[in-house]
Length: 333
Image 1 (tube, one colour):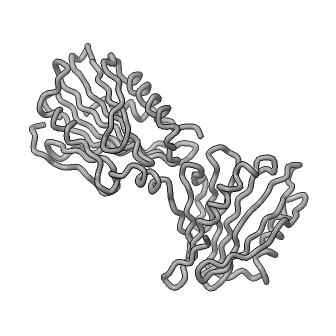
Image 2 (cartoon, one colour):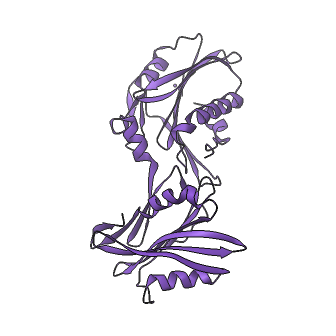
Image 3 (cartoon, helix red, strand yellow):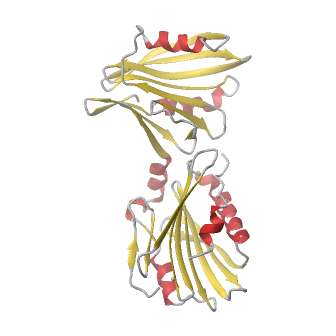
């Protein structure tokens, strides 16, 4: 998986951002990192389109007496996994250094609680300032904390107090649990929900229909569709509907396997079938259901030559289907 790009929005976000110490704790529930500002920080949020969806940059900052304090949270549509973290940090540092001239005086690993990040010390000779930067990725977000001050390498009390206040919030304290929880996202349509692993799949930005969502694999080896409707399927079985729909645009359709899954109080039809289109064979695997809650199709497909590589992940995606029944959830797992 390619690490998400840190877009040029960094340039405008990282260049500007101080006050007398009064301890205003900034700690929203959905932020993993908290910080104490001298007074209420200013707000600057920006959204940047990307091929995988919007990237959100949320900046909180203050500037007083030549000292600049800043905390930025970057939220990605695809969660960078742990193996990519080094590359993401490297790219972020390169973007930072390219956006504003400075000399890197220190670059070292830095732990914030159980989370491993980076600590940088940068000298800006032209402005006669020093800047300390902390970078740490927690779940789907990259946190960028910065304190800049005029003079030598030792931060004055204001900047030192801000840097010392940086801490991981209790809900994110356990690194392994936080990483596992942050991987998962959910799509809700009608009386159905689909949970997916955001390190492997992302919601196609072109999906605008409230009853239909397309999920794409980050490695481009598979696609999936989650389609729902509030009414019952008029055909006798979902199999008839699914295979008839596949035949409309295919050269051939071959049923490989059929089955039923009983999970909670819901029974879903399971189908494996091969579709040949434009001279290429695609393996399809899906769960299908129609009942008083409505109708749902969750189907994923991959070229036959690569299906074995993603078969397990497709099964995991299908198992993320949940059917709401009378306020309770019947999970297709």
